[in-house]
Length: 349
Image (cartoon, rainbow, N blue to C red; front, side, top):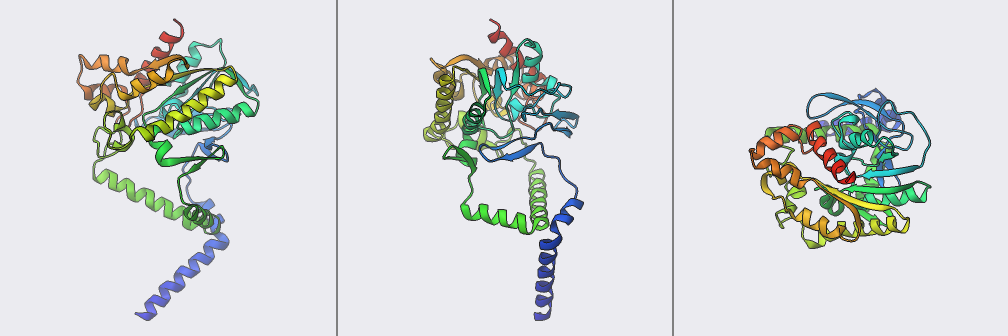
């Protein structure tokens, strides 16, 4: 037994020594998952500059994803330029970024095509929230960017992200990890890169298999998953007034920042599948944002009525099947078209 333990210990030490000296080389030989995001030292993460890659989303269909020199998502055939002024900037999370679709099928892409006389930028990135909306907009303004209008699409998951994922310290966004965990992860990644990569891969595959085994539906049709992120609009179990006010405080900071720089602010909202199934048209989110927008917003783009009107003559699950990707919370092309038409209807009137 002692001999086996010694051999095992010796093997582990040998592998760690190899990883320490040639881990970076081994890592180059492993297949990489293409990631369009990159770390940012002020607002946590952003899209890579001048990036282009082909991805596959929940629909199984492939789509091309492109960014410009500013790290903003854009059309892949867009001519490169170094402009820092925009008539309108949109900011939000993955819904605003437009995951799963070619850019011309996303609501921001369609708006950009429709208002082609205006200079429009999409600042939205997956997993953004009000703390990052504020921090990123401030960073851009401080670095010479200017715009006439800023339109924030507030997501259902924003409350979760501001309270569970991020913390705001001295004007910067940090992930909610203990200092010890953060330093340990950084040490392992730098000293034993292949071990860190392998551990992360195994963990991700393990949890993916568990989710599939439990037949968990990512769209939150089954509230055994995403319930904490999505159901706060009709259930007080997960997030109370204190948590909601944290996100609202960042929206207030954003308004003050924009107002100080003579930039008009607007807010847009939309339902997740969970709201279609369990919430109502006059949702808590609708009331919160409508109240916040009083004397602050130029426009309030409320997409709840457009979706809930369709429930009158349709089954709720049929609405989800038609406007969302299968097994996912995000809108497909038809869902994005509703957000596009809602915006144009309000903006042009």
